[in-house]
Image (cartoon, rainbow, N blue to C red; front, side, top):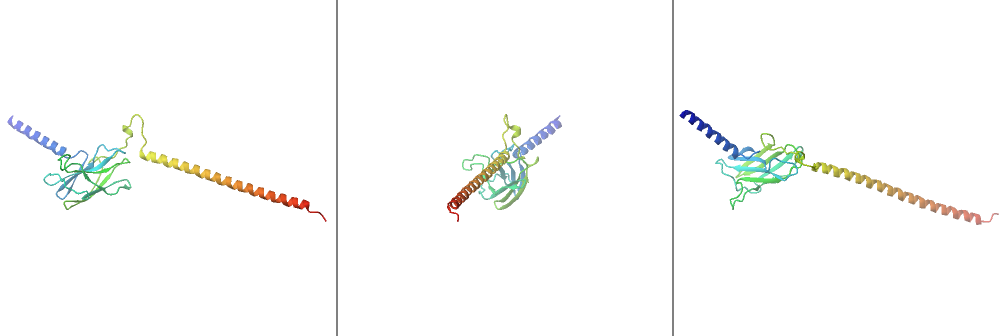
Length: 220
């Protein structure tokens, strides 16, 4: 019985240790290494939906699991891409107040709002205390969330996406442009018609004057 109890205690200890290890990694993040530093990378808010304010999040610890809290704004940057679209370089801001000792220490966020569903790629560059960082990660089941559309959670009315709104506006602009073109053509035709009518009046008046003069001239 004592052996069974010992084995049970060891199994419980291993399970608790594994649970704590998994809990120490932010949900929906992937862990990458840069020299002695570990970086947990993912979205600031998950699940991640189109049209909602979000951010690229990185949580940084050293080899002794101490949070890195002294990065400058330009130490790390990230470029976000999806499909054939790519953002400019985004900078990170601390998500903690070091003076007050509040917030998740070592956590930094780069705000961004995803506007299209699909997989996103984060390319982090820069340095941590002189250690170069060049890391590229892409959303997947093993890393962090793929951006989702909001249609499935909308109720009772489905709100059009930004792309749908933009498409409708483009169509409306095209129609207005066509209407403007038609109106411009009608105006030109009216001006041409008025000009031709005026020219006809002038020619008619000149012909009438010529006819009257001819009538007044005595025949020999």
